[in-house]
Length: 109
Image: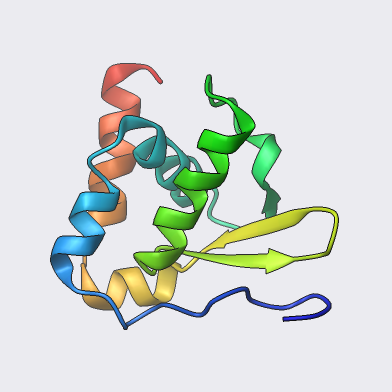
């Protein structure tokens, strides 16, 4: 895809197992919980998350989340933005985002 826009629109095309496998990693859960806690659903850059991993590993994590249909990834050429797919998640898995926010709050992350 050229220019701004969703990079790989995978929402609704993945099964429940794929979503849960994506969320087995604590870093990916943290990303989704941070996005979910921001009720404005604003777009964020991938490097705005404080993930203690290499850039290559961050890229992998965001790809897994996108392929699971949990985030939109917007390609701006030299950077990518992400946005939570709140509506799709709430429709397919009601309460999941609340659970992830609660887990983050309870662990102090």
